[in-house]
Amino acid sequence: MVSTGQMMGYVMAILLPLIAVLIPFYILWKQSSKVERGMLGAIGYGIMGYFWQKIIYYFLKKLALSANIGNLDVLAVVDVLVSGIFVAAGLYWGVYLTNTKQRSLYRSTTVGLGFGLGVALFYYGLPFYYAIRINVGAYTGTDTAKAIILSTSTASLYLDAVRNILWVLVYMGVAFWVGKNHLEKKRLTAWLMP
Image (cartoon, rainbow, N blue to C red; front, top):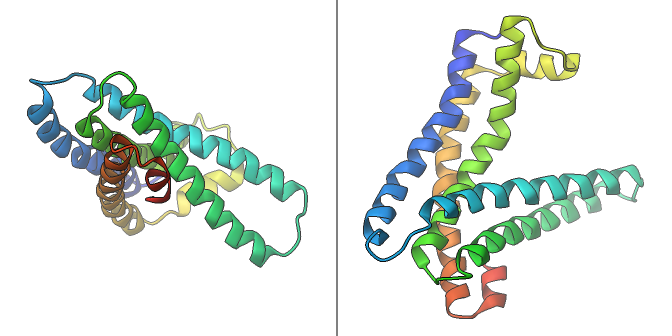
């Protein structure tokens, strides 16, 4: 059984970043609501930008690892660099799509909020779902995944909630700069910023 503390840790690892998204979102929405629409769509683009870059990246990473490519140290360095490129692509994709009809720095910044929320949902949403299934006796996954969920400490989950709040703020700032450079038609700088 997953303990109550662990369950609350999973809830907080998702809920606290959600609150951290709602506060700046409300401020941005209030400032821009008289001029434009599409702020909820921008959050959606941010979340989907994170998901698609993660899914494509993991697929390519598994493909590269299955090919038994050379030295693991070199592969780790390449892994970090390619991961950064995919994060930049995901953010830029969201910023680009939110600015196709009407150009807006507010929506560009909101993409970063969605991207940060996507981090929390991706890393803690599925384990939380599995933890619920473990507790009700309906878990059908692997024993390794179950052991990882059961061995996760409560303290690490609460620290991860704080880390997720920081990721939301970092991605919001990065999306602001990417959007600013995109709106000024400095597309190369927008790609290099993250």
